[in-house]
Image (cartoon, rainbow, N blue to C red):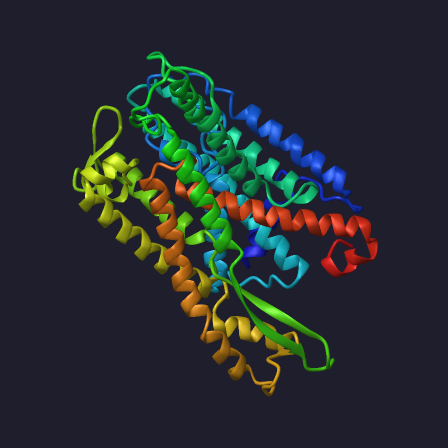
Length: 453
């Protein structure tokens, strides 16, 4: 029996958001996206019933990127959704699944299989996290916590579908951008104080010091408090990422059948997008899970607060401030090298598995009737010219993603380096989609060209 035949009965009972049967107006898409965003923030503030407040979150460093909130109904965040998507892309790209995504049936089977995998991962990851609490929580309450986390992740899965079908972009992208932006805003502008009287926000603390006439250390303060130095580095990282996000090489193309019609194939500098850093972070997170489950000090040793103190994981964890960087230069250098190497490696693997390499791109351009002006219509010529740029851009883009993320982490930039990288890319793509949607509203005839009807 084929995979489709085996899974078809499950497809029929899967929860699904109905696709719109008509054109959705710009205002409606904004409304749906806004409603889901509000619901997302509300769910992220609902605490898990039965979870002791004293339990330390061992994965606090990954929460922002996974759009989750520790100890809340959305404790798992988008982890199951993203993991399912990555696994399916890798299986499809390596021809293990070999589904025909050019047909409606093939796409439906792919999406249904991905949803089944995501639902399984919602339950599986809930068990993994609950297992870490087995010594602090009774077995009965542990199962209730598993149910809460799994239900929260399933709700988030359906919310992602609502945004994808009725809103702008994807829910996953919206949730990441919202969580990172909220964290940056809170760390920068929070007017609240902690028990010691310290402002939680960097800017209120800076203003308070100026008003009180302080002249020493007005731009910095001890970790983990955010300060103006971190805020300024956040702006620097943001501008750098925006600049490189828009950098691209454009290869001129022409249609062989229709002379005079020309186009360009853009090769972005960050060719593999932020996927290399996401995969690197996911790898490090899995190493942490293994270290916690096995208690092997060679993999990772922890103190009473859950902070890494030794083992391999110690060198897979960034220093979080400039002062920590100065005190542990060897650790910082090792971490930098490991991250950059893995980012380059994952970038090269990703473009091959997702058919973004020179040969696959040349085949797509050839099948669409495109060719390089001034050259005969030959796929070997297309591949040769693409090979001048794609492999080099892949390596440079992967290395850049790793370098900028590490730089942001070392300087203590708000929202983490990976979070800023993801958010800038997401906002840029949302801006492009908003502009396209507005154009289709003003000129309805354009919908046929951009696939709206």
